[in-house]
Image (tube, rainbow, N blue to C red; front, side):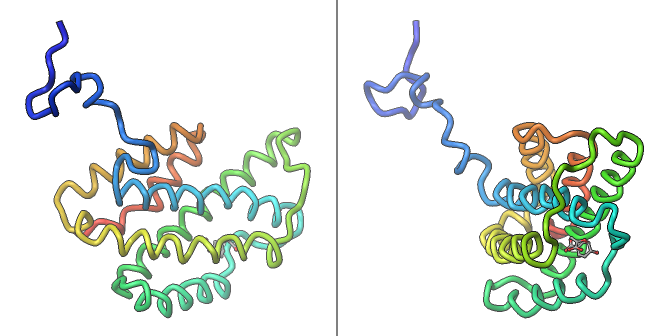
Length: 187
Ligand SMILES: C=C(O[C@@H]1C=C(C(=O)O)C=C[C@H]1O)C(=O)O
């Protein structure tokens, strides 16, 4: 016998009431932050492919400075505290470099896994990273209240783990995603 859940509208079965919301809504603002961060991290593969075998270093302090300056400048318009925005993007950058290093090591060891194509860093990949900057700042602004709750870290981590699973991230990228997020939650 399938009784209606208490509080459900008459005629609605418990099953209908429990229908999960679509993935875009599920998990709320913190999961949305994890998703945008995963989008950014996935681009580390293209960055690494652009650099591998060219002698271009993984770490580019001038570019990092430009990214962080851009973030600081845009943070006010997005309604995000400048220090928070900068800290979150520092973590994004470190996570990207961790993944790039992991891929370089992998490609050195397993030549068959090397990328078939070398994308253009300045003209192709960095503009995509720049577009994600705006999305991540908007995501942080939307997560203003949940970021301050004690439940922030577990919810964010749960969202990140779910996201990594849905994208079939390997261990390198899953670790990278967790590395990208610690500054999101207020202590
Ligand atoms: C992504 C790159 O590699 C590194 C990571 C950066 C980032 O995540 O924004 C910026 C500069 C590099 O230190 C890049 O060179 O564009």
